[in-house]
Length: 311
Image (cartoon, rainbow, N blue to C red; front, side, top):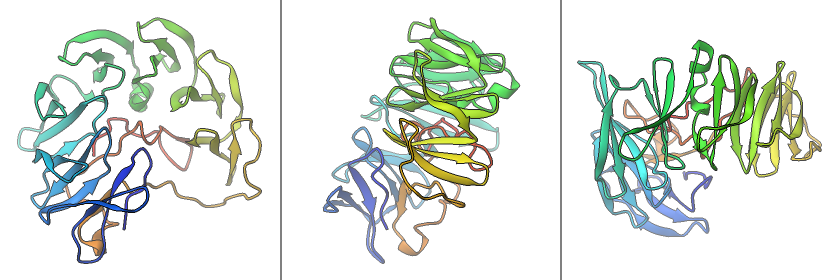
């Protein structure tokens, strides 16, 4: 079994009764991991999360060398050289967020008493939420500015609020728009839902239908779909009623097939025991990087993903 190569050039793979290996896109082995490693993720931003048999998580480099020892309960993939790693104290119901650089140095730390949610570091900002306020922190933990106030419905979609390519989705009440990196509104809050799909494309919901726009509000795909997911730069999976199909960025059919059933699944980690490789990890989860797997609008198929990015 092997991980997919989405967002990575080096991924983990394993054979029955063999240690985990790291392979490149030509399926050549570039490293063999120590047998003490129970599971491993993809190499992203130079490092991959791994889990040992105590169910603690650390990081290895592309040569399989342990760079950050396994000591955390949950971790993010690194982004721009920074990752959030967490420890949970079940007795006191407290989560500690350790913000690390790629050397394992702690830049600062926060707890669940400070914020209800900590996101992924992007464009120099770390998103954080406390009660109804969504803020951006810098790499020292200092508040840069408040992005927006969020209501109950927006709290369910907090994963859409992060800075990417110099722009952020924000909300006013139950409506969503865009701000630039200086916190200026560049697209007023007018959509029922909005998320960044990458490559300058935003997936949007208006009057119960989904489409796609750019940051100038130019409509790229008409609002006529029940669900939409960006699979790659110019390919989208769209649903209408009980069926789905593939279209290109001009709204033209990219296939002559309709799908009545489909699954959206990425193998982001591999376990050393091949027989258990497709089963969830026990207790110590390593959560998916929400910027590698874009937030999805798929009513009845897929909820808006948690962009906290923990693995």
